[in-house]
Image (tube, rainbow, N blue to C red; front, side, top):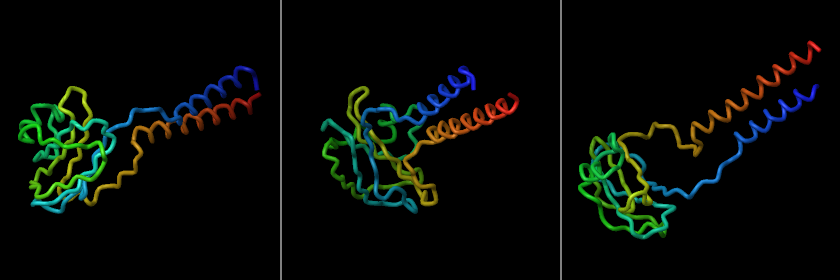
Length: 169
């Protein structure tokens, strides 16, 4: 192989390696609900588990929809679907929060834990009606799977291309 081909193969392998390398990210806040879905509209008790919160000045809001609308969970949505800014709740311990007697409508329900400051810590979880048949959350984002697949396909194309060139030498 010539020096150029070796450099090309080395750069291609480095590119594929960078695609598989994980990146450092800040700790994100999450919120889980048990049960994660309900079979039909009605009144239910939920257990919420917040993680990743570092400030105790958070609020818990319960919104009578699982759809945040076009502006996301902004101030207008909080006022319209949640009836205001919720009640104070300390989410720093990560201990489960028991919420009893929540009315779930046909539109579902969303629980939000958030700081009442711009760009503050926040997390939400939507509980919908009859979502038991959905696929399980594997913890892997689809975009990451696409990048990995593209990297493998690119490596295969490069190997195939180089092998055809080697036969003609």
